[in-house]
Amino acid sequence: MSSPLAIGAVSAVLRNLLDNGIIEQVALGTTVNVTATAPDTIKLDTVDDPPQLNIFLYQVTPNAAWRNVGLPSRNGDGDRLTNPPLELDLHYLITAYGRTDFQAEILLGYAMHLLHERPRLDRPAIRRALNPSPLDVSMLPPTFQTLAASDLADQVEAIRITPVAMPVEELSKLWSAIQSHYRPSAAYQVSVVLIDGKKPTRQPLPVLSRGPVDPVTNRDRGVVCQRRHAAAASDPLCGGAACAADGGPPRRDSHGDRRAARRRSASGAPLAPSGDRSYRTAGRCQRRRHRVHVRAARRRRRADDVSSRPVAGQSAGDTTRRSQSARDQRRRAADCG
Image (cartoon, one colour):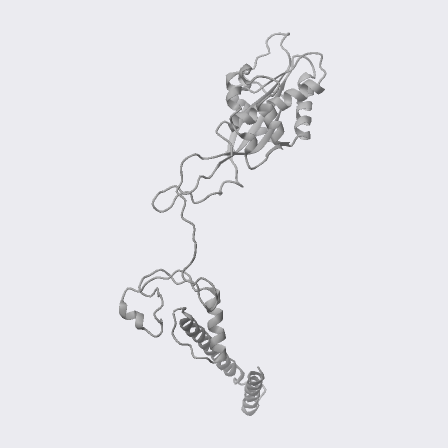
């Protein structure tokens, strides 16, 4: 993850990228200044002022894709569990300034082409921009020396540069807020910048096992709780096992216990009370099957009532024979099943 210096580091890397590209490609017959300042501070008062390309960070928004990473960050007691990163999208305005005809348009076209050819800021380019190897770091300005410790090249997510189409109304409001005259501009979004949290957290202990191992299934039996009353331990329906009927935590039967209980119930073996809770599991299965049979019987009775109603043009004997034939067909189907 990056440090809080990552926002300034992104601006520095973008300025370095445009500065190197302008020097190599643009042939205007004069030098070009690439800056990263506010547009209202740029003044081209004299004829000798060179053309200028400016990068301005006008908005910072949270990134929607990384916003829910690491939640919840605190437990019920207020202790900090995780350090979710601060995820940010940076919105830039690239503006071209020129004293003569077509200088601003040429600069803006080259700048947009450079960013089109480099839609991602790779890690080697970030390291070269923030740590120029031929030069001594002490020779750089103090603010640039500080940006070298931003760790921007070590963050997990790659930094992407995406052009943004701003409506005329938003551009007008932005330049009105800047209190400067409008110049040829292009808007870009740079995402995502991840700033890591530094506060200490309290990590829960790892789970080694969920209770004793069942000898039948060779799996953990789950979380076991003690009953409140000792007399309940002799209940044949519980078999001395843990139960949550008295306000304890809910039972967690493993899948192996349920499958073993079904196999023993289907084979006709006695379901003796044991500590693996298979006796109660089989009882629940039997009650569930009983409820299914009761619902099926109710549906059959309703179908018989509907079929026994007289239909126009038929006698009562025809209706009785039709309903009896339908019942016989259902019985034969049940016997075959």
